[in-house]
Image 1 (cartoon, rainbow, N blue to C red):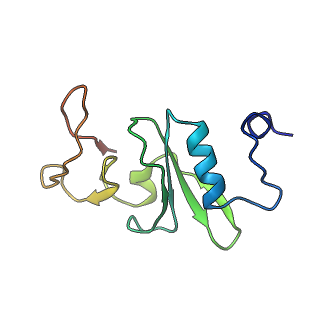
Image 2: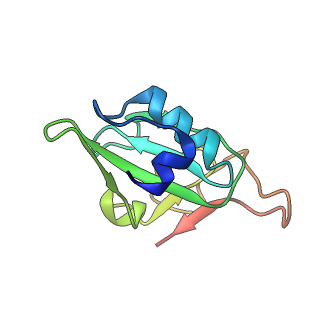
Image 3: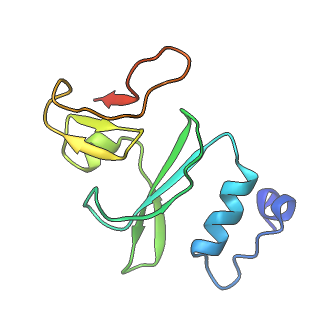
Length: 113
C-alpha cells in the first residue's frame, strides 16, 4: 500500500471523489488543493479553501476518471494572468481587482506566467 494512503487511512480501492479530496485536504493542510473539472477556469470541482501559497492544482478527466497534475495553470488555460486568491483568469494584471491579498507582504496573490 502507498505510504501516504496508509498514513492518512484514505481508501482509494473504488476510486476517489470529493470525500477523498476532503480527506487529502485535511491531511495536507499546508497546501490548497484545487480541482478543475475541465479546460474552463469557472469549472472548479473542488477548492480546499486553505490559506496557503502552496497549491496542488489538478485537472479531472471525466473520460478516464483520473486526476492530472497541473504544473502551470496559465499554460493549461492559455492565459497569461491567473489569480491564486480567487481562481480567476484575466487578460491584464492591472485590470484585476481581487480582494485577496497576501497577509505578509500585502501584495496581490496574482500569478504571472
